[in-house]
Image 1 (cartoon, rainbow, N blue to C red):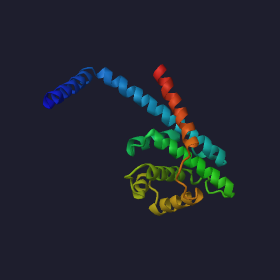
Image 2 (cartoon, rainbow, N blue to C red):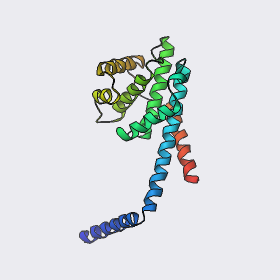
Image 3 (cartoon, helix red, strand yellow):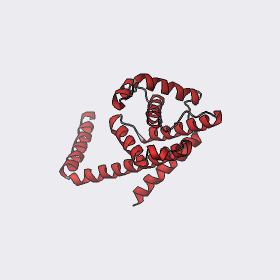
Image 4 (cartoon, rainbow, N blue to C red):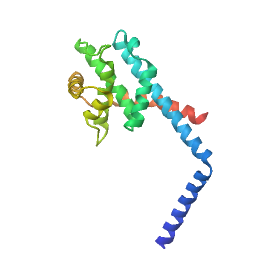
Length: 189
């Protein structure tokens, strides 16, 4: 009895796969709508990151742009399999860092270290979200930054945020709701 039910389920799955392979347009529609959503999320997150950096660092727009941040996020999406939720946390960590930096009256973030800061944000985000993470050496090799610089930058980042890795519900949910609107808009169109 169990064998026949299992056999039927396998047959249904196989038929579905055959239909998808026989009609590549079905697969293209699914993948292109997902990629469109993914690109929109990357763009929204890039805009958020740029906005925070522009407010926090004088002359940031001369060093970095929304499109360069979006390209960085796209690279991470494909290279480290970063997901939307991690992108949201990345933005929340940057907001927390800037808020704490301002409250302390220090200026650590500047035009010379924005790129390193973005990489450190990724490292800290991945470490807070995943069970298994890439070592800092991976990012050092990937972006040709000495690992000692990354390690020191990560330590400084953690000191500024007072080692508080918790992202509050309100911080997360505001960004999540914006992304949800993007997805809802895409579904209705």
